[in-house]
Amino acid sequence: MWRRFADIPYTLLVFGIFMLELVGLGTLIWTFALRTGQLVPDVFVEQTLIAATAITALGLLLLTAYILAYHVLSVPRERRRQQRLETWTDRWFGVLFSTEPTPTGRLGADATAAAFEIRERLKGSEGKEFSRLLEELRLGEPLLDRLRSFRLTTRLSALDGLAKARLPGSIGPLMRAMLDPNPVARFMAGRAVARTMSEMPPDARRDEVALTFARALELAALPPGASGEILLLLEDAAPVVLAALFLDGRLPAPLVRAALDVVGRHRLREFTDEAVSRITYRDREVRAAALRALARLGIAPPQASDPIVIALNDDTEFVRVQAARAAAYLPPEVAVPVLQGSMGDSSWWVRRASAESLLKLGPKGIGTLWAAANKHPDVFAGDMAAQVLLDAGIKAPQFGSGLSETA
Amino acid sequence: MRLESKKAMSAILVVDDDPISARLLELTLTPGGHQVEVARDVSSGQRALLAGHHDLLILDIFLPDGSGLEILRFLREDLKQAIPVIVLSGHRQEDFADRATKLGATQYVTKPFSLRDLLAEVDRLTG
Image 1: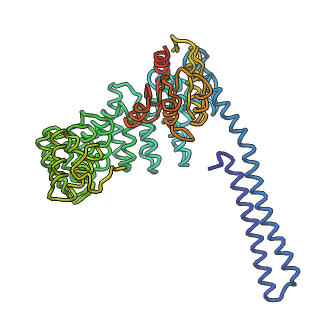
Image 2 (image 1 turned 120 degrees about the vertical axis):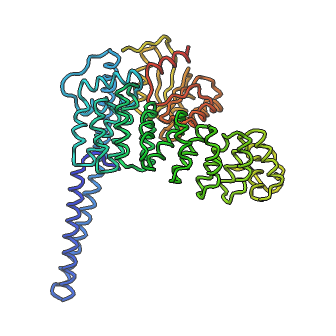
Image 3 (image 1 turned 60 degrees about the horizontal axis):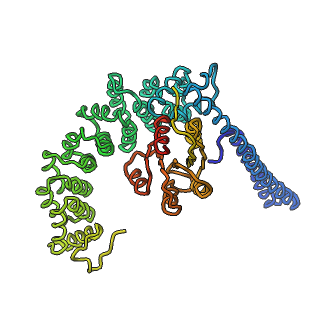
């Protein structure tokens, strides 16, 4: 979008031009209609036509002039804004590292914007110190007020600012914003809470907030991708929220899926049992997420052995794919025979995942792949074994049969 | 809270399109005696590397005209320079760090970061 300000003049101009065109075209149609009935002379029609064309030309001229003037004026305006932001960046930096006094009095929009931008980029003790300073100066209060606005854009921009500011004092209002009727606002509020929580020290207060946040996340009813992103943003605070979520036996499937996804992405091994217990979940997306989490953790404890083997025969293709990937972490004496079997699966993806898992299993798995490439009752399984060996730089018996390395 | 640098006078090239991040790095490194040059994109970063000697490169991955890793590749493969490189990124995913390390990054730092820790790292790498 080329416009960053002056929305109202632009809207008025477009509306004015539209009305002029409407009048011009209306008059033209009316004049032609009168001419059809021989009620006006030709010269009158010509004059009307010229006037209507002139109106269109005038409209185009006004619009072009406005756009050009906007660009001419907005470039220096933007440059001046950047300079003010830079000045405030220098000043806030000085305040943070005690080389400048803390500003007093009412701070303008540039000071606030620069402060939030700096806060977003700071971590650790400097970030916490800066948040404390922002709370002392009450810079977050206008944003908290804007959370109550009836305009969605105002609420969203306030949520964006609060996500950058990460003010511990804003967590309560942000939790309430997670019940906003608009799902985008609920998502933005969730992100802001997560980013604020990620910087909280691991104490009883954070545990308390985690319980409330888990409940708010459930009530927000966001899609799994959105919930997953929020949970990822928790960073070091993720385990405490995940523990609260997994405690809830009636947690909706999309949220279970998101939580399992984060277990895998953050490599949270302490939740291995939670993943194992959901391999047989009623929802197939959750079953796949549990298996994917185990594969990402690179672990398959003994109690996961039977569920993974069963999942290799699941009705759903993507569950079997994930099961084949997780099987790479089972003991070779369990994994090799089952993966050898799933090499003959009807799905290309399952065959590929099975062959890759065999490769990860070391000499036993590679030996099985070699044997499969040499002689497997299923020709597709044999081809896949040869292809995976080839991609790994191991010359398979079928190398000469027209296979080439996968790009 | 104060920033203290134990090392002086290193020429550091910062390639980052984010003006606030670049300014914070400049403000952090300059008082310690480091000379900081800022480039905003891949092409100006490569020009700066060609134009002068630097003791350290601080590199953002996502730049307007390409990836910061292109600059890293240019530095290691075309210029054959072994100067230390700190890669900054908003991505915590391991594959980004792996790619940067394979191309010769010395350190991979995720944003947001601590200015004090970064300054200590710069001192260590230029010491």
